[in-house]
Length: 83
Image (cartoon, rainbow, N blue to C red):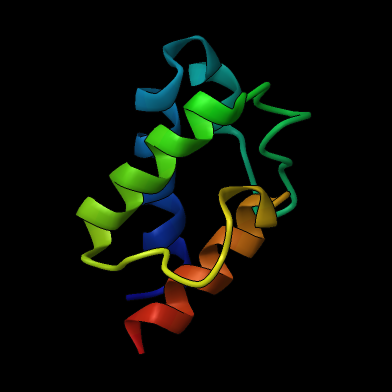
């Protein structure tokens, strides 16, 4: 799976986590910040983690949900788990 494919799937998950972020999500990049740019709170981030686990078939077993500040960091983690 390419980084772009992961980003596209993450965009869907981010919109599902908070539908008010649809416009921001469509233009997001790997540098987009989860809390500052999307305004995600801990509940939204937890939902996002669960959705990522289901969508990619991976588990966040060794990091906390607050370990990620950008979309790129989430993509890096997913890529590492998919190898």
